[in-house]
Image 1: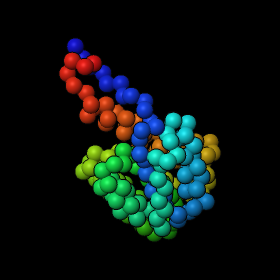
Image 2: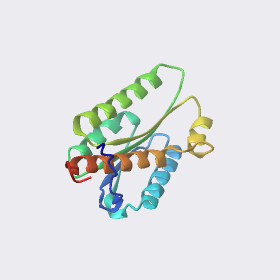
Image 3: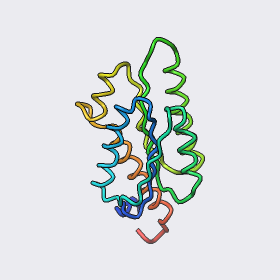
Length: 162
């Protein structure tokens, strides 16, 4: 018999951290609002949500790692914006942040909802922070919560228990 895990939807018991870059705060603020709103709609408790600001996207990895190392944090949401400029800086920052957060999840098993936008211009950012393309902060929160719940279900599952 094949077992399909159905995670308990006890979001209220999760502890989630949001790490947010304050660079381009006009956009990351909107993403933060979206993430917090989604947290509430999913049933998360406000006292179980931690928000930590860092200066730029590059610093997201270090802040996320600090939360992952606590061992009581069930999920992390990383929020940031990188807008293409005239140099290769955009490429280095985007790849570096993505790699740091991917490595963190792989090493620790703590899911990181990836809410780091890499856009060509401000219009694309606006579309993804509450505009026509939704709010990527809200989507990152949903991904972190769903994955944290699934990880709990995987760790709790025992043969013969469904």
